[in-house]
Length: 194
Image 1 (cartoon, helix red, strand yellow):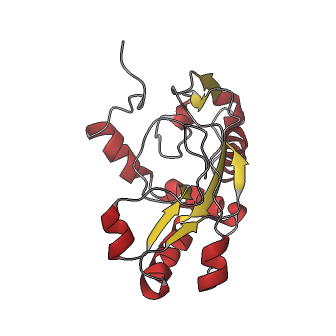
Image 2 (cartoon, rainbow, N blue to C red; image 1 turned 135 degrees about the vertical axis):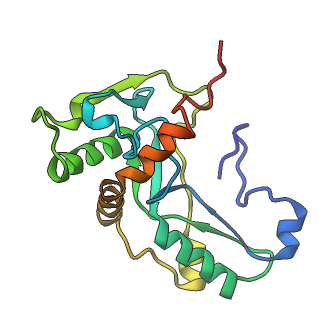
């Protein structure tokens, strides 16, 4: 793990109560239904089919490791059941993708499963927007310990996990429409207002 200062650490810094209270876990990104609608390349925007822009931060070359949410919860449960107290278990999917590639994958799935009325690809909606200050170029995680010590491995690969996620959002458009209409203005997060 590399801290922002550039120093290397084999283990993340944890508060003392975490080290003594029980096992700890970390993960990077999740492919998940029921995630809170937010800015960025989300599937949850009811405006998207109407041709609204699909924002991608910076140049879209940031790399993230993706893990389907059910694999994440199974790993957490395994850590709670069999993890050694005081140990840290990194949970990763071995599914690193550039953000732009993720967006293009989502667009291709939407093109197939819910084509736009105008017949154009969702990829034509991709718009590059200013990156967040300090946005890390790559998040990487070594999940070999949980695999080795606890025998955990994700059941879903990237393709099956993202397909399940897209399917869920398409089947639950009303859920996200309700949230975005009444509780969340989809404002850009992480950037100071000037």
